Length: 428
Image (cartoon, rainbow, N blue to C red; front, side, top):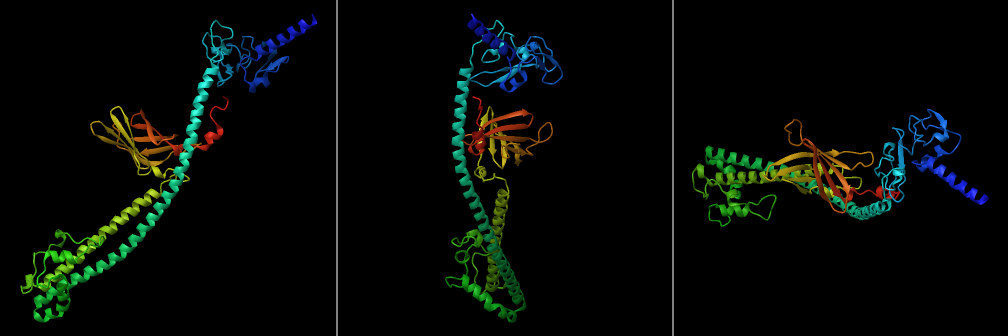
């Protein structure tokens, strides 16, 4: 008899304890230790402990009724063993709808709830495992891209130094060719004045002019042809190539001695020399301008923040496309974003602006701004969110508000080791 009483007492104590702590997480159990009185968690009132979970709301914060629907501000804790635990509003307790996967919220209703936590947990765990595999592979690819980024950064720096040296060399050539062009023009002017002054003046110019004439007159027939000019005059930037016929054309096809001042061989030779030097100077100037433009463009690229390990550098000069209905969107990282319709009209959705830093990750979002004007005013802009993946691709494009676009861009360099260390839903 005594044994039956003890067993009954144990079951009764267990029933009372479970009834009174229904809807409570393990972290809140310290507030519900059975004693003579209960202090509302907000400290507003003390009530007899028997009034906890008695289906009548005594505390303003609803803490005395965690397992019933009596308090409008109360909340019920779904344990959901095998899946993710969570809270639901107390008003959903025993309302005939299964909210907790373990069916604990419908303990006193007519609803026939099944415990689906294990199946949900299995699917969730399979998803998390897939995400972790993707993260592992993405981190490996990221390391490769970091190594490539470091090498590419060094190559860019070496390229910049080479261009700067080339610019310095061209600067020296530029000064030399300017001097020679000036001297050739002076010679032409002096020759013309000498011809106008007569033979006495001409003799003083003969030695220089004759040497130029003889240099150009390859076959020594006493005349200068286009072919002879082409053979003698080389371009500055490409020493292997001779002048084209258009570049070598002189006012007359042939120049022969014995003509009057207008066709005097000495004057024509001086004119050829002046044009020759002018052509060479122009080529050097064009080469110098091209090199300086390349330097400026490369310097601009090198000022961009490509990440702490230059892991995003490989994205520069790349473009990624995605077709959404009648539009094709193109993202060129660190450059621009465009939208092209099937009709062929292309619109700028923004030019590279900056990284939009977030508290957790400095390199999680790109901002492209100052795109083409929007018909409602302002200009188009795009925010690109980078997500971890094993491939680099543009995944989605949306326009949540007029002329404001958001893109999901997947790439291994967006994978963060911290995710792997923290894990995803560790409570599973």
